[in-house]
Length: 319
Ligand code: TXA
Ligand code: MG
Image 1: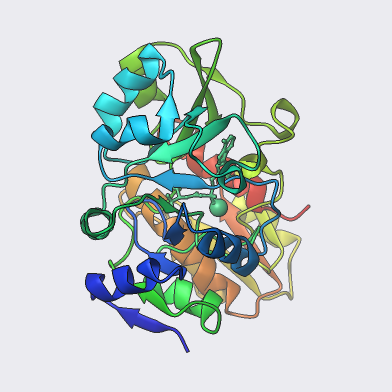
Image 2 (image 1 turned 45 degrees about the vertical axis):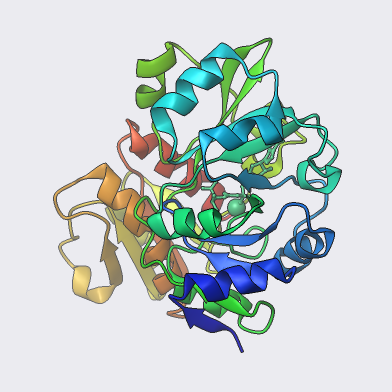
């Protein structure tokens, strides 16, 4: 039975013994293990039921550590890391030869970030190795934003989850790689395109599956509830096609008029996109437990973090 703890030393103890643990970050919870422990890394793939062709993100404690995991760092990467680290930005950089191939799924690049969550930072500071950590959910399902979500997913498979409260951002990190030394955005995430472009100017966007058949982060079906999920600009009209069905709603800021007939969640009463992003996955987890026939989610304005949220909704919806 999994143990939920706030004891960072206890989490470090398990990691030092080649175990895999649940770890809080400001984006979502991770399923963490020592990048140099083959046993731990294999267990991450096994527990998550993740195919071996899908590489892992390496979490480091400080910028000083970067040269131990990556080489030939482009100018724009330095600018971005100076501006956004620690924080929800993942950079795809040319891998250092010592990074095990299982981490990168045989690729020449390695995904790296420095998490901002104080507990993740304290944990990394206790360790003399970086942590590989994909989101702590079974492959394809909704990412966890609380320790309880992790405990529900993996109660028998991992010894401990370190409790750091609800994830502040609630959306995965934004992933940026480099093609001919030019930055390319490969996954929408907790940092918006607008914020990125303020730092390095216009960026190319390649987030569709056809752009990157071997970068699975962006599978068309991902982040999905088990309940059939529909996404729309016009919830009121869509509901009509579900009469006599048990329907759950996830709405941006306004309640529907006849809302008492539905199990509904409001993401942000005052229409704050950051808050909506932070609440989305927890709302999806709650509705997924209500034995509903369908979940209908209202699309958000396609600006700032709204665009990242809409990207997740597109991948979560019933196909
Ligand atoms: O916010 C986050 O990024 C969270 C927290 C725990 O840090 N982690 C996370 O990991 O979302 P994961 O594994 O669920 O998603 C990372 C994505 C994967 O889909 C993987 O395919 C992609 O990053 N990725 C990792 N290394 C890559 C590489 N070298 N080249 C291309 N894509 C890569
Ligand atoms: Mg994931």
